[in-house]
Image 1 (cartoon, rainbow, N blue to C red):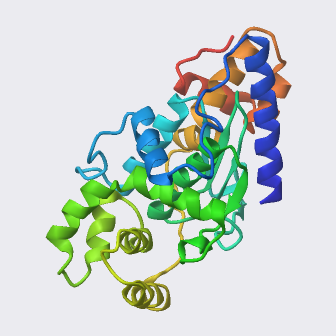
Image 2 (image 1 turned 90 degrees about the vertical axis):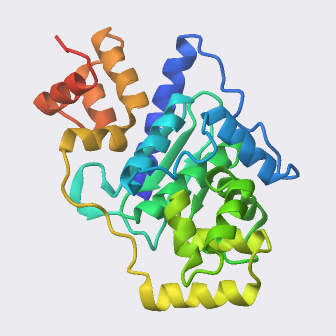
Length: 292
């Protein structure tokens, strides 16, 4: 985790300096919220800024596509959003879900979200939203989501509630609950609709007083003791497509432009992206940029 954190800090520092040198404006939403603000209202504001419509995740999307779509939406706001399950591109150094699920590095010019790609896709979805709430609040932190249990820290609980409203708005969830509340597995039905984990769906139902604490804890214990298999990273996949998540298109394009304009050398560009030689050039072509 520390190696990953140091790499992300270096990327953030470089991007911030590059943006400031080019007279970029700070991002208005960074640290725009306070802990005393209603997290549900902030969650709705996050949805508005992202441009999410009412039931955007409930269509025919598969989990992986929905995670990718949300990550791209976050990057369009100017937030580096990185998903990786290994250290750099070293598949022999897998990240541990038990150690952390994600972290946020706040900055008015170059905020960064990192999501542990070794985690389940449903968990990655919530991590993206949770860390974005950290950016909105202006507080850095490493997340493991033990605070999903009632009684977490104030900041983590606030970010959980804002993230839950972003992903599963109260109005839509209550309407869906009327359809699935009497099913054998209502939390799994909610999870499929909103592309979150069943535990997040259950906690959301608890917060909205749709179930009591005993129902929540019974489900929580059963889910982790009997059904939860732990986060698993998807195996294989196209190496260069993976780089959009591992490097982040926002950051990758900025580094490529700097190299093409001679503002940095190619060795520095290689070090910043973790790509070298022909691999770096092929990735550039995937982003629509032809290097000399």
